[in-house]
Length: 361
Picture (cartoon, rainbow, N blue to C red):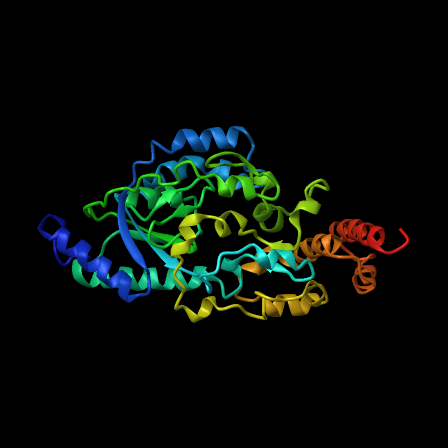
């Protein structure tokens, strides 16, 4: 098949304007275009890997070459069409929800339906719109689905800057948004990259419960609560468990204190609305879910990624950090002999903490 219009005859400026317009129509809050030269970011990634800050995420090391060279991931790639989509349900950025130790804290991004399919479908629709104008062209959509340095590409495109907390921050929208990319062989004009605007602020670095930041923009994932509750499939280091509080899936602290999130926009996507009251659920209620209930309640949710044993492990730690309660002890005792050694270890730890808080101990 031949393109409807030869690339050399395309009005690339108009096409780019159209693509941005179509992106907004599809529900993306912003769409920008970057070249794929990531030479500036490669030394940082290499140093991070050499420090073993990636922990169990071996895929980060295996695919580092393709991360830094998109043309090796998708041959022929010239540009990255970068998009962002808001997901926050609230403009309030407060640590207050973390103070009720009997309630579970689930990271905002994971409270609703999984964003991967929703965003990928819209990127495919965008690709079809482009193809209707230019004819067949090379492209591939990515939504956390391959070795892509998405924050680096987003920064180059001008969607924001990589903040001291390693999140992408946008001066008009804060950081509560998803990122995705469409690699393409179309030589579209690129947008101007963003510069850093964190200044002397270090609120995110100071608030981290586990002190996971080795420095600005340098995260030791092995200490990060998001890594511990989602990526890691192993035992959570005992010295970090008390610092996790009631965070059972992810951690938002470094975003909650970021001054730029005063510009947060509430999402209009109904799929991102909390399911099963995950914005206000009790620890005991979630700990009581059977494996069948867990699979049913997390189907189509980012939380399914942790698996049932990971779910119980995380909840056991949170229950161990909760105020002393006979009800909590009884619930933990029911899983003291769980089939999973991982669950048993964390339940026994939590029981010890709970019993220490009872009167007379």
